[in-house]
Length: 312
Picture (cartoon, one colour):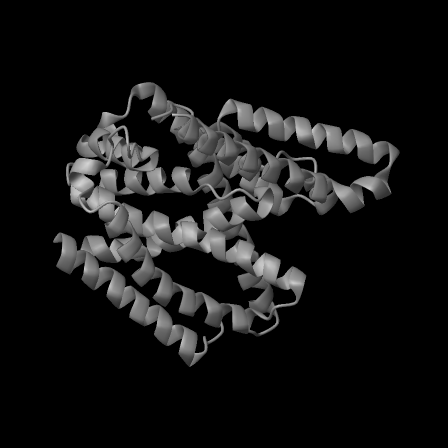
């Protein structure tokens, strides 16, 4: 478990929630001054789907893992908050902080229900997974808008994909790993994400006291900095707020490996330098060149892995 994970996540979460609270309050005041209402009545279809999803999430946690109904219900507001944080981060950086959000949800349940590993794993996974799906959906809508797809049809496609993918995914998983308890966390199936969740769950069996003093201070400092950045970003005029560091990007830099953060910074600086001399060139080709670099590196890595398997 990386030490820098905690202040980075704390910074992202506190900044997002502070900014969201200020903007909602400003919206509330403006709508009241015009005699309107801040909330609108949702359409029956989406509202019914949301209610059904809540019932399924809560009931399945209780039936399959013996989780208390109140603890299962707690995943709903936590999932909404984490989804707002993840959506802001992916909107600002294009990178979904799924691992960091997942461990934050584990920390939340570690504080509420210390020592209860099933709650720490499954309820936290439900809340963190919801935030991860929110970021994927945002990226899908972004691409859909670029190619002219309507949000309504994209939602229908997502629902069909959820239904088919959940069935196919389960059968594919069981075909590859029929005995997860003995096969996972081995040399053949190292499953680093599983190992991370397990380590965090074991660490947080005693609640917040299981974290070292330095980590707790880092969480507090990161949270205060995040709140300050969120407040300034919401209250300052746009021409001044643009000079503030992005709390989402700053927090994500704590979470990502240093090699990734440094290369992202280098790419941003190089693009800015080129844009100072040839602005039209970077406007046309910067994103395409970046996508080519990412795809090329990924394909090369896959090819190297396949070559190593064939050679052995």
